[in-house]
Length: 188
Image 1 (cartoon, helix red, strand yellow):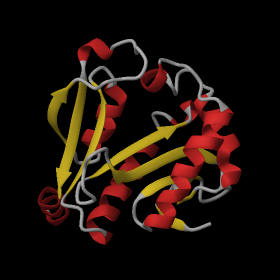
Image 2 (cartoon, rainbow, N blue to C red):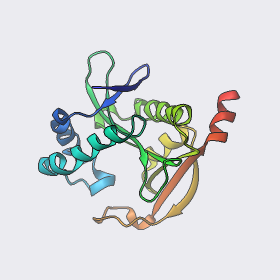
Image 3 (cartoon, rainbow, N blue to C red):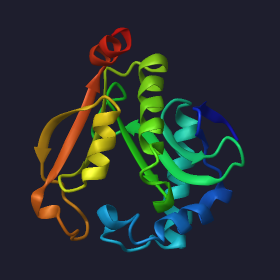
Image 4 (cartoon, rainbow, N blue to C red):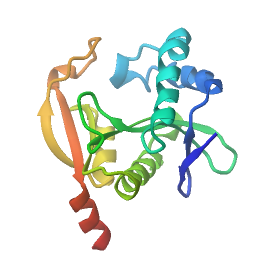
């Protein structure tokens, strides 16, 4: 399996088909799925038939965009995943950042550490002009990660969620950082 990058506390590596059980366990936690499916777990069959083929296809298409397992560099413990990919209807020059971590990994700075590393990767190794991320207006923890990662609030909007999620009546937010903002921050 190919490693995309490593930080002090994270290794981001390509998914393999053997990771389906890790995703099932992650998505079985109602707190993890709160802002995604209102706490409903993702069935293993859906992970195997839909998610894993999509995740693996990203790796075949591009070494720089896709979904990666987040794990410990010391004992390879699974923490969750991150993605950097072209969002729906968006060009590769504006990839979207995303993450999902186990509940016991929350509040440790891992989401910020991985997000910063992927933003650096996007601007150092791809033609990205801007990196974006989206979450629900009420998802304060995810918004803090975006802000700590150097992103700024760009807009409020209303997403078309496939299921009703508590708090979705408040809408959604998009954060972004441009290459110019990233470069200016690095030089400061």
